[in-house]
Amino acid sequence: MHVHLVFVTKFRHKVFADWHLSRMEAIMLDVCRDFEAELVEFNGANNHVHLLVNYPPKVAVARLVNSLKGVSSRRLRQEFPDLARHYYRANKLWSGSYFAGSVDGAPLSVVKQYIEQQNRPG
Image (cartoon, rainbow, N blue to C red):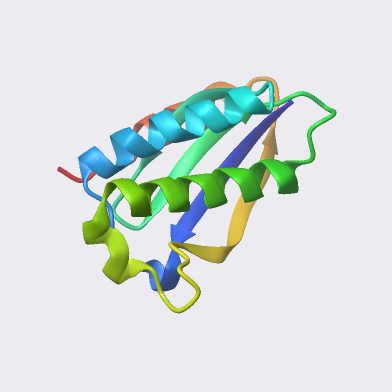
């Protein structure tokens, strides 16, 4: 099963540079591996990220999302102290909401291409 996920930063603040996104991709690869899922595609901009994840049916998308957002927020805060000013009140990098759309068959390549074409910050 495939899902297209989009996470936005708290208050859509412009937080990420390319090096943040590169590290975040590695973190999210690890989280997906823990869920026996595959991060098929990853990209983002300065205030949001897109993921295309292939996950087994036994995995609840909400649990996967919670782990992806929680682990990435925690590790980025530890590794990039300069991001601390973007962690509001409860030390949250991400908005509480997210987009999750199921993807299958022919549209899979379209979603993958869409994610690849996101304008990544320099």
